[in-house]
Amino acid sequence: MIELNIKTRYAETAQDGIIHHSSYIIYYETARIEYLKSKGININDLEKESILCPVVSLEAHYLKPLISQQEILVKVRLDSFSKVRFKILHEIFKEEEKCAYAITSHCFIDGNFKPIPIPAKLLNCFKLELSSE
Amino acid sequence: MIELNIKTRYAETAQDGIIHHSSYIIYYETARIEYLKSKGININDLEKESILCPVVSLEAHYLKPLISQQEILVKVRLDSFSKVRFKILHEIFKEEEKCAYAITSHCFIDGNFKPIPIPAKLLNCFKLELSSE
Amino acid sequence: MIELNIKTRYAETAQDGIIHHSSYIIYYETARIEYLKSKGININDLEKESILCPVVSLEAHYLKPLISQQEILVKVRLDSFSKVRFKILHEIFKEEEKCAYAITSHCFIDGNFKPIPIPAKLLNCFKLELSSE
Amino acid sequence: MIELNIKTRYAETAQDGIIHHSSYIIYYETARIEYLKSKGININDLEKESILCPVVSLEAHYLKPLISQQEILVKVRLDSFSKVRFKILHEIFKEEEKCAYAITSHCFIDGNFKPIPIPAKLLNCFKLELSSE
Image (tube, rainbow over the protein chains, first blue to last red):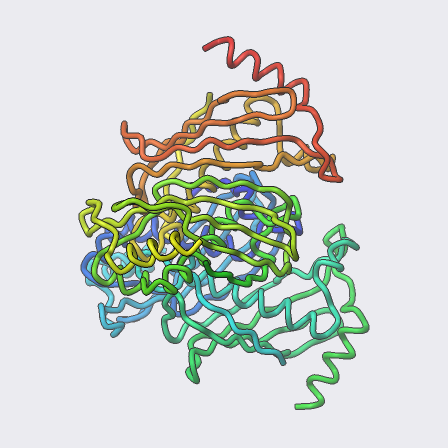
């Protein structure tokens, strides 16, 4: 599990005065990339080898509005995994209050957009993470 | 049901060469606002009265990648509704192929972020839309 | 010279209720890519050959605010060019009123970020465009 | 003068593999809002009083490309000011290397988009900043 501090930005708001729901998707991705890096998976390096890790689906829930210039904490952890798919849970907290959460589902694909197995190194990290809970 | 033609933009891609998954969320919203306008609900006017129509949750599925400068068709229709909540289904087509879809759940809230009933005008449109299927 | 109709989007606003100044930069690019396509230069194709056409500098002026759901017209034309650089003028109109404009300066670079001459095909179009004014 | 550390995000890239030029505009704004806060001007508070501080014009120069997941330093300082306008200089550094800079020009406007004088508190800070150089 990792935690990332983010400060919401002015440009991430919309005319209703609150952070736009699409901006959360960016916060989640930013924290997820740090999470994967903590497991030894650097997305920039993978992409140089033409391996992508796209979002297959996502489910996002918005509980409390966020405003700009707000310090938030994004917590990321593994939700579940198989040999080819994994799900990540992301939660956003403002002080101690949970404001939003999302589960994203991912796979790895090669340069021809064909699914490939989850890298062994990551799979081992996933096993460790779930068994240590 | 409404359909909106959108051309994907260069800036909506990311370094993997395809349209970023957060950009779809903007396409969906853009088409949904047209859908609501077709039902007599102008979001800009509502917000002048301090009434907001936020996304409470969303579920998005990505089936085929999109690239930049691509003509897509976004279809939007009502999925379901109650007195205070409604769900909208959005689908993205490239030529005849479905590339992505999402269901968003919405409510209406007043200036104090308190839920209020769906405006009667919209509720009537929703009844008509579902009964005409 | 080309003209592109764009409808401003909800998500392109910020909390001050108007279109964010960074969104104009996207409108300009979107129209500029159409302009280049009208000259036979497809950015997607160029990038497959590892040739990029980055923005070297830009100068943007904001005259009148834009709100969301607004139909705007973006006019794009060549401002000036040399063998390695060219400048593009972009103007945004709301009905007949000019609301903003920007000049961007560009070069072409190869996969090692080294400047290369403007493609001959484009250079010829530029000569034609300036001589026909 | 203030300095802000920012880490570039995946979603801020485009298909050419580098940070999109519009993303720099967001970095500049984010740092400028911190700069103004350091002078006692909180944009969120101002906007509650219907006072806006829009970008009137901007001039941006791109010297070296940035990639995603890159730690950058944004330096912001006053460039010049009059009673109604002020200009801010923003510079982006990657390690010790300057990669980009921009000058933005601003005014303050009231709820009717009429220019108003720069708040006295800020004007005093501006005088101090320029005299201390």
